Amino acid sequence: MVVQVKNNSTHFSRAMDSMPQKLAANILLLGAENVGKSALTVRFLTRRFIGEYGDIESIYSHNDKIDGQEISFNIWDSLYPQSCFTPESITDKQLQWADGVILVYSICDRSSFDVVRQQVQLIRQSRKMSVNAPIVIVGNKRDLQHQRTVSSEEGRLFALSADCGFFEISAAETYHGVLLVFHELLVRIKESRAIKKGVAGIKGIVRTVSAVFGKKRSE
Ligand SMILES: Nc1nc2c(ncn2[C@@H]2O[C@H](COP(=O)(O)OP(=O)(O)OP(=O)(O)O)[C@@H](O)[C@H]2O)c(=O)[nH]1
Image (cartoon, rainbow, N blue to C red; front, side, top):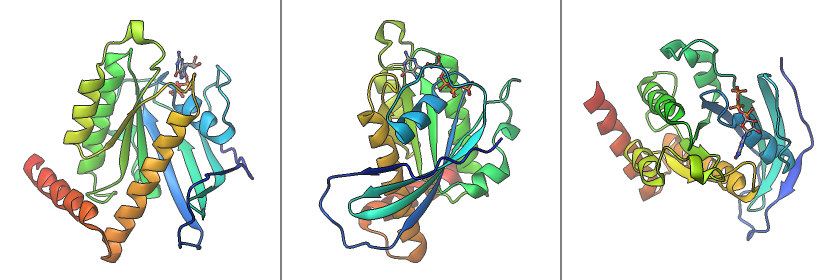
């Protein structure tokens, strides 16, 4: 089922940038079941946490304004397959479609962290996405500290080693953390496009070089 949510607009009170043209970004959310993929998506779209989300796979459209630039987000909130994880769990179609990926695990579910580790590997090895495909890893349910089984350090170190952004958030408690996740992914998407056009800054070039060498090592 495909649901379109239109005319959701938020505005960032950041200094104006000189990039007037509208930017489109396709964002894919992946991760094990029950980690909060839908909660994160709905928080971003509506600023609300509604508690229960049902098992619906959806692509949402959302217009935003960041640093004075119009952004048209398409967000694919995927469903984790009921059977156990296989490489086919992420389809070529999803990877071809996506400009960037948000990988979600729950800080109180270690197996969901293992799924994210496998998914990063699959994406990095896939020929369907570029070698420096923008990825942000999210440790969700930060409000459940007493049930934590994955430390912040472990999450952060893994993200660093895989050249991914990293945030720990609680979709249940705050909108701000969710906003930072999407903002960071957008920065990475812009950087990756600049690399393709040959106008990347030094940070982007360093990322690409390390991604290429990392990929070669794992082949
Ligand atoms: N305590 C807490 N619960 C959360 C948080 N985010 C989501 N949840 C709860 O976790 C459960 C699963 O959330 P969903 O957003 O449906 O998770 P999902 O990853 O989309 O799950 P699937 O649709 O099965 O793939 C729901 O009961 C949510 O209310 C959070 O930050 N903190």
